[in-house]
Amino acid sequence: MASIRIDGLSKVYPGDVTAIDGLELTVADGSFFALLGPSGCGKTTLLRTIAGLEEATDGAIHIGDRDVTRLTPGDRNVAMVFQDYALFPHMSVTDNIAYPLRIKKVGRTERVAKAAETGEGLGLSALMDRRPGELSGGQQQRVALARAMACQPDVFLLDEPLSNLDARLRLEARTFLKRLQRDLDVTTVFVTHDQSEALAMADQIAVMEAGRIRQLGTPSEIFRRPANTFVANFIGSTPMNMLPGELVGGKLRVGDREPVDAVAAGWVGADSGDGAVTVAFRPEYARVDEAGSLTFEGEVETSENLGASVLITARTHDDHRVQAVVPEGAEPEPGAAVRVTPV
Ligand code: ADP
Ligand code: MG
Image (cartoon, rainbow, N blue to C red; front, side, top):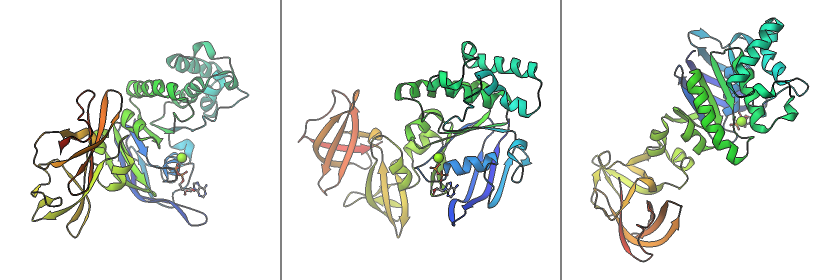
C-alpha cells in the first residue's frame, strides 16, 4: 500500500517526441485513479514510466516514501496489467499466475499454492490447468489480474483493462474490477480513453492532453465543473452548453441579459482572458420553464428521446442553441416557448 507522487516528470522519446511534459500528480494511498485522455496524449507512457519500463527524461517518482525514479521495474514493487494481457501462451493458468513468484525464486509448492489461492479469489479455480488460448477474453483478463496480484504489489497499473472485452462483458467487468479494487484496497491507476468508464469506476480522474494534466478531480467535479473547454468537450455523453460571456465588475453577462453572480448561478467560466469567458453548463443540469438567476428564453427546435429522458434543443432570441435533458413525458413540443435555466 502506498501513495504515488510525481514531480515535474517529462518523457521525451528519441526523435524529440515529448510524450510527458512536466507533469505533476499525486495519487492517494488506496485510491482507484483514472488517467483519462484521447489517444496519443501520453497515458501509456506515464504508466510505463511509473512501472520503470520507460526511463524518465526529467523529474521524480515516489512510491510511498521511496524515490523509485532510478530503480529497475523489479525493485519498484508495482504490477502492471497490459492492454493485451501479455499472458504466456504455452503456460497453464497456474504457471502464468505463479510466474512473478518464480522470478522471485519462490519454491514450486508455495508458488502453486499461492496461484491457487489467488485464482480462487478471481473465480478461476476450474481453469487452472488450461492455457490462455482456451479461455474467453474475460477469463484471460482475470488471469492477468491474478498474475499481477500474486506478488502483492504496492501499486497496480492497468492499461486500458477493459478495451479487449466486448460491450456487454465490459460493463460486468467494470463492476467486478471496482469491487476487486475496493476489497484489495491497493492503490490502482488505470488508463482509459473512455470517459464513461472513468466516470463510472474512478475515485479520482486526471484528464490528460498532450502530456499534461488539464484537470484533476472526482468524477462529479470533472463532470459538473470542467475547468476548461478541453475537459468540457471531452467529458459527457451529450455536449455541454457553451456560450460566450463576459465578466463585468465581478459579474457575468451573457448577451443582453442581466449580469449575474457567476459562482452563485452555478456557472463555469472557462478559459478567461480580457474579461471574455466561455460559460458552460450541462444539459443534465438545466431546467426547463423555471425562472433562475440567469435564464435563456427561446423556442424548442427539436426533442430527441434518450430512453428515460429527452434532450431538447431550443434556439434563443439572440441565436444561441441551448440544450436541456428533461424526464420522458415532460418534454415541450417543438415550437413551444421555453425558458432554460442552469441549476
Ligand atoms: P496514449 O497511451 O495516451 O495513447 P502513448 O503514451 O502511447 O499515448 O503515446 C504518447 C506519444 O508518444 C504519442 O505521440 C506516441 O506516438 C509517442 N510514443 C509512444 N511510444 C513511443 C516510442 N516508443 N517511441 C517514440 N514515440 C513514442
Ligand atoms: Mg495507450
